[in-house]
Amino acid sequence: MTLLTELPIQRLQFYLTAPYPCSYLPDRMARSQVAAPASSVDTVVFGELVRLGFRRSGHYVYRPRCDACQACQPARVAVADFQPRRSQRRNRARNQDIDYELRPLEFNEAHYALYRRYQTARHAGGGMDMDDREQYRAFMLTSQVDSALAEFRLDGRLVMVSLIDRLPDGLSAVYTFYEPDLAKRGLGVYNVLTQIRLAAGLGLPYLYLGYWIEKSPKMAYKSDYRPLQVYRNGGWQPLTEMEHD
Image (cartoon, rainbow, N blue to C red; front, side, top):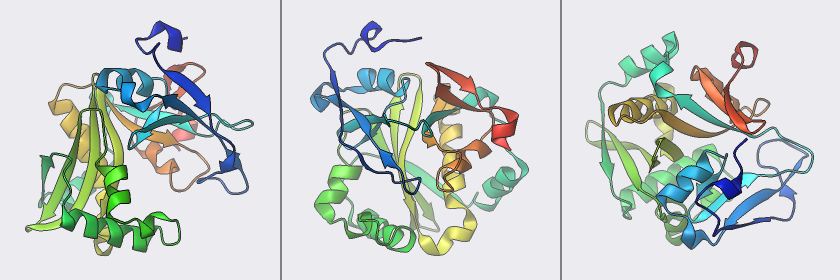
């Protein structure tokens, strides 16, 4: 088992938040363990934290620490072992006319407009659909690690933006938004497939996908990327075939 004190992050402190309503499972309360000060979390330190199940939102670096629930399990794809399913191969072929480019974390009005359309269509009433430009900047463009925006275009039209962190041992998929009227293209799937190929091209062994939550429709899809590894009982281990199915 890897302990926090064995890693080069001794200068950090960790505190628990007060309970708050869970975003993924109804009628449950959640808590998070937060790393502080955020100014000390650079790319190397964050890479160590991600291997222990942490994620980030802007400068906020956290992992679930719920009192009576362990449903949120950190997940990653072992890039070299990834075997695309038939539906994923079809998705890649269907979207081969989409180009992407990595761009720096800079405000772009077209990105923000797409973000608002996506939030309004997919997450109306969740709060993020009301994000103003400053809230968008704090969430998407604030980072102390090696980060980039993947900008996807179809015939020159902006259709998807994905925030990606590059870590010492992999890429981390932070957040993605896309054109709602192109949902039938499966852009979210195409984004993950693209990041797997990008990690392979960079010689990085893993793509970190955030949390796999078996009973949450919004998060259970990650088991489609096989073989998926999850962090449980102090180490990374493959998801079982039963859990994949």
